[in-house]
Image (spheres, rainbow, N blue to C red):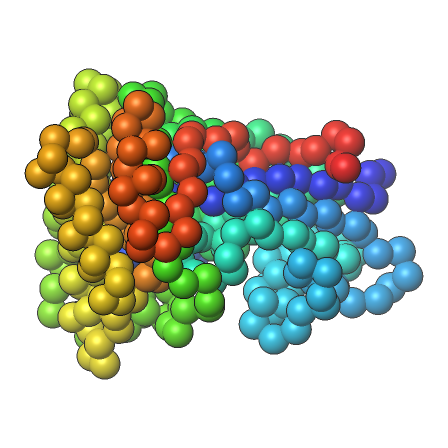
Length: 322
Ligand code: PMV
């Protein structure tokens, strides 16, 4: 029996956003979504089975974590143990190179790495689809970080049918503009609940996103970068609009985020193909063609720290963790 495994996964940036669940228990989303897995900001996670009968322990960036983060990992491991018919507790050591909780999806890389390492040590099926379904139970968007490059998450109707899968798409680059690496005020879980419970626009968001996903899949198939960018920007701004329409209102974008969107718009007016997106935080990500990435990064550097990212690998085991 393997007693330790290490896996690495990267965050993903959605071009069609996941925002809302139809089943919180099973983590089934109300609509499908589509994303690019990044080649930067990895999470590396080691799961070691305990033989001394002690409890689960989560160590994040070298510090033992308690509270919500540890409880979430234990709940996830409980599901793994139930499936594996095991009682063994584990020590989970995780190292993040992405600012935790700042809307750069550290939970996606975190649960994708954890699902991959845990599947190995608890001897669960390790094929991509099984790991994607399992990662989804930790954090919805984590199911997409199992996949390399570009992924569509099929919303599905039950545990079996809700998973992410690789799709072909034209070459893209993204420029991440980090404005704030602090933890966000309202978790995406809380804000999704609030959206479903209080926004008068929630149904319109679901319907328009389902249509946008179809259009985005067609644009990816056709290799139409302009269409991909336009659809992604509108979808992101619609997500922020539905989030702001909750009561009480939740606002993730700051004035500085809007300045970056303005900067992107003026680059577009100058003839550069670039579009904006943002997750549940203030940081803005510019979507562009690889050939334009350096110029876009240069133009946006006055707003904050910029990082050019490209399509990256799916979650995988490290044979020889350094
Ligand atoms: O998987 P969660 O609970 O971190 O939710 C992610 C939600 C967004 O990042 C805002 C959108 C997305 O599709 O990744």
